[in-house]
Each structure stands twice: as structure tokens, then as C-alpha cells.
Length: 117
Image 1 (cartoon, rainbow, N blue to C red):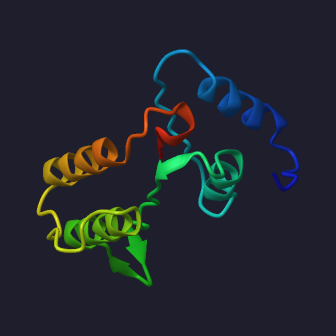
Image 2 (cartoon, rainbow, N blue to C red):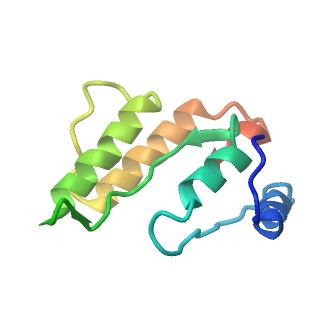
């Protein structure tokens, strides 16, 4: 892993949670442009089955619509191995159903391949 300066405590906590004997849900939040995505990508490199980073609510001054957010999520599903013929979900309920189907399809039973971000 590339050296991340000033995040030793956060890295230790993420690794502790990853190696826990039970399922964990972690929300990483904070101001824009402080390295949240970089931190997660470095700590969990080669351990993620699915990865999606949400769009900023405002991009180039234009408000991001739910459709744009769902389309971005759909592209992440496709990059992770979802069938190319799968249409873009129309709701978050449908989007998470598609994610569940993808994760079941990709599940190898190995811990390192079961982490979703």
C-alpha cells in the first residue's frame, strides 16, 4: 500500500473492521477533496468485489438528478461484471436488487472477495 500520511488511526480501524468475524458497514464521510476515496481504495486494494463512488450533488453548477445518480451506479455495476443487457435501474430499490444479484453471482465464498464499498 502507498504510504498515507496522517491517517494511521483510520487505516488501523478499517483493517480491524475488515478482519472482524462479523459483517460490518462503514460510512466514510467528510469534506470534499480530503482523500476519503483514496484512503478506501488504498486500504482495500484487491479486496473489493464492487466499488461505487457517488456523484457530487452539484457538478459544474448543475444539480445532479436521481436519474444521473442511478445511471452512474449502473455504470459501476456494468464495470463490475453485470450483464451488459441489464437496463439502468429506475429506483434505488431496483439498483440495490441488481447489486445483490451481481454479488451473489460473483461470490466465491472467500472473505477477501466479499467486501462491497
